[in-house]
Image (cartoon, rainbow, N blue to C red; front, side, top):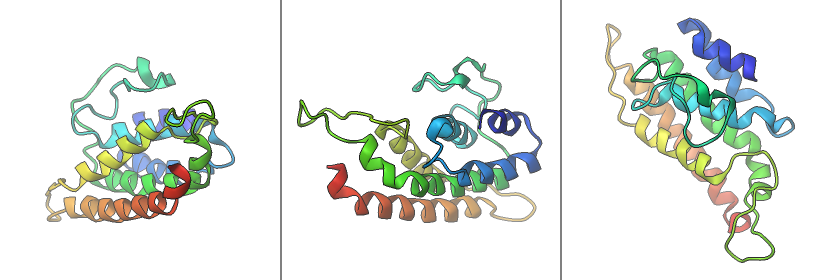
Length: 173
């Protein structure tokens, strides 16, 4: 996963487009060791405030020492669209593990305990926020309103997130 992320962040636009899809379809349910870094990478790719090469301040991941090199995420619309398409795929892939990673601590009725290396709740919230932010992408080029590709992906992604979270609501408490 880490090699894919390095290739993704330093790659050409076609490479970024492909690797955005690949990061979304890896089997994180059975091999969860890279899911957090993959999600952080995808979030950097679409973050219009920080940029795809900026350090992640919320995770202590391997990528926190990467210096900020741009003030926006990827300018490649297809890579952004594919990134937004990948977020719900990852969420769906690990959805069975969400109840395990968000279990309540048996000693307290309100303190969450992360029992695996899956996505913590704050990361899921950041993914949800990124999808909401993608709804405001009005990028336009010689092909017209290409930002609509991102907006459509975000609507589909938000729908998928809501379905997954609502279906797990009773076990997530």
